Image (tube, rainbow, N blue to C red; front, side, top):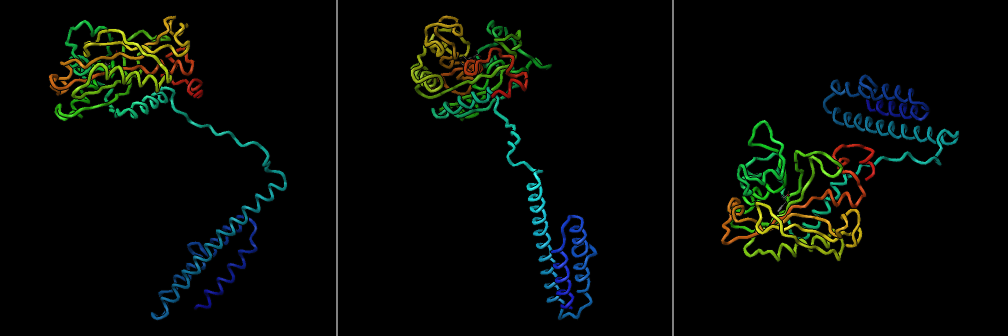
Length: 344
Ligand code: PHE
């Protein structure tokens, strides 16, 4: 019996060496390793052997199967490399040809800016808090100190769903309430977050305004947070984001959810404050709305405004993305035109 193992082994390896094309190789494989092949027949014999011989014979057949498998694989690789060598010799493969260029994907320019923002704010201790796009009217307006019929609701034309209490957020500020309620632990813990995301307004679409755009909201709540903290924090951000000697200025403004409120400008980094087309010859670019969190908003977030205070800001990253890449028209951002997207 062990005879037949070594006979088959010799026969199979000998035949394999002479094989030069893949049809013959497949036939060899079927003959020895196939379901009805020689090795399979050896396995079938095991049952008819005396008990004492079965184990040794089985091991022998197993070893044979593995060896033939390996030999088959090696021979296949050898044949392949011979074919390649022949093609090379006959000039069928021109190894001096340049390779096909690989098309690499890239991040959307807006995503790139958001990542820059997030890195800077993370370095300054702000954690990213993801809030939702589809929001309740209460959070988008009422709890931010904009009760129904408040005239300031008209500042933002809103997309409502079929449920008049549910809308697409018009700004990232409703995330302030969610973050306070979620992370504030019943108004007992300080928080420092940024809330990036898409916002929606029902507006005339033009080169400068879209019905969707992104914002980055910032919120810091603590026991002794003052306006100087807001000013210092934003000035530091501007230095890291725009230029190491970026100048900022603050203009009094109005938002229902902050008091006092300020608009933040950074000195135009294109003209260095001289005045150019981009800054409309003012020397300044508006970068954020901001202010001290209104006591009513603190209360709605679960904080006692006699003990806690905070600042908030909202920035629009599209502007800086457009300036950075010389994008003339905001409509390119979300139209998914590959001719635009492939440039980044
Ligand atoms: N939510 C305001 C807007 O969209 C910006 C803002 C955020 C202002 C936070 C003050 C504080 O215009």
